Length: 188
Ligand SMILES: Nc1ncnc2c1ncn2[C@@H]1O[C@H](COP(=O)(O)OP(=O)(O)OP(=O)(O)O)[C@@H](O)[C@H]1O
Ligand SMILES: [Mg+2]
Image 1: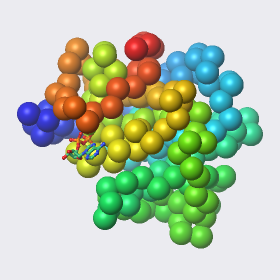
Image 2 (image 1 turned 60 degrees about the vertical axis):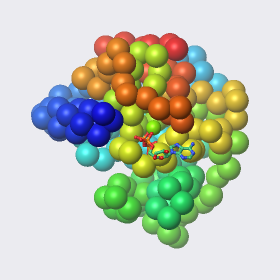
Image 3 (image 1 turned 45 degrees about the horizontal axis):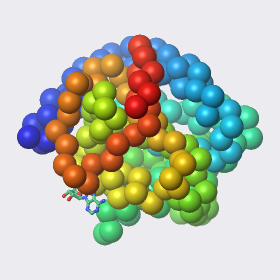
């Protein structure tokens, strides 16, 4: 059930042309900035996009320019866990790492405790309007989201074509606080 659904959405996401991906990523960024919580946050985690996901470089660079502490994840394959690292400069500190996803080079790894994070910008293959998400199938984010502070705010960003009334869900699947697309802000 999850597997076929994932395949279909990833393939639809890939069919979008690069200009549309850039434009909609920018609109999603603008919608994200409408949340009051963003301004108050000191430590924000964001993913480094790959594979036609919503682009995050502009978001990260903007927050860096606002002197916020930005954290990005690295995949630890053996434990199916995310390692969190502060990033200060995408261009200089990042290379193509595990699963072909950009991550900090070893010499730029600056570990951060999950409990320090105020806001997480979460990637996904698909979301539903109840805040549930479907990832790539590793369970990385499901495990990670359990380790956050109770008052940490989780924001899923995605293109509208990735949002459904319902996505296949199991007991361990996390629920987020917001889903943001180029068209709307869904508060759960
Ligand atoms: N919190 C958890 N604790 C232990 N195992 C988990 C947890 N979350 C997920 N898993 C296991 O990980 C596997 C993948 O989970 P799932 O299909 O939900 O991945 P996903 O949400 O698509 O991936 P990701 O979280 O990396 O984006 C499942 O076999 C599941 O049992
Ligand atoms: Mg899951």
